[in-house]
Image 1 (tube, rainbow, N blue to C red):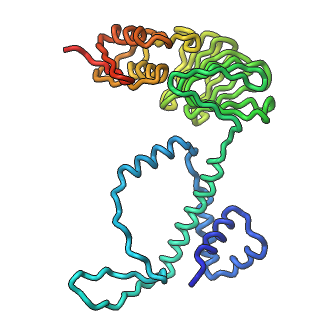
Image 2 (tube, rainbow, N blue to C red):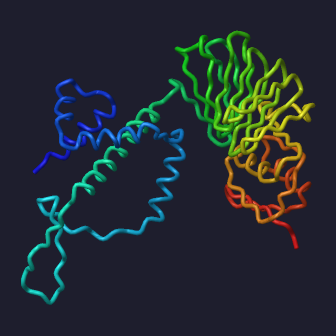
Image 3 (spheres, rainbow, N blue to C red):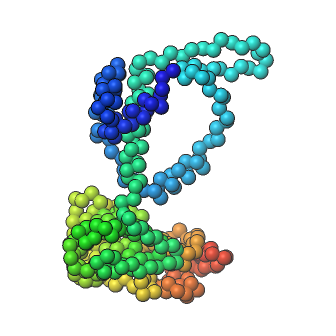
Length: 337
């Protein structure tokens, strides 16, 4: 019987370009080497989307919840090329086990699938390694202050993840952000904030970055800020008291800042934003679960404090024309008939 584990290991190490000269020579002597070369050439253009541990975990959970349970499999025979058919209960004799012949074409397809899986696994493992040596994450209802190696200050909002590598500073002033943060970057080399929704580049300035869902919103409160969409096809330079949004990859620039962000001073402010964004912020600031039974999602302008839940609920519900009731950590918003 062929040592399939050895074959898979050999092929995986070949893809990773880690074979010794002796191992490469053994591989080149294989009858199927020309076919394998053709497969690998086709895999060179293979690309995987950026790896996200959170997205991968959520997809895995969804898959496990929806996948039907499988019955316990029959015990496999000692030969991989044989397949047994279960006997009906009334049969007492054991029929001859049918033999399934695996042709050269099907065998090559199997090798191709193994190569593709090995290649994807290698890329996954590389992407899964943390790019940033320091990762900080705030929980709902928690805000933190961070001082970067060059003394740049970062105020981190609730339910936000931020990462950076201190050993690369100050040559590479790079920060990863998923959530919201207010930056006061010291002057120096380019300061870059990477988000899934786009990229923000500055030299030394003050600015707020909101990067959640499909939206990136950048408010400049000092100096100049350059914002780049995810594809890198659009760039916008904004100055003091200007802002820009990237929604679904499309840039929207606004001259004139409606308000300066004050969430890090204890107050969440909104200007013509969907109601769902306001209610989501309530959840983040207070660590509660919000159930909205009102289907209206008109733009909302207003504010609420981040340290007084009762007051915050009134300041949100009244302008929206809604009622609310609390049950433990759950808040229900509804429209009175």
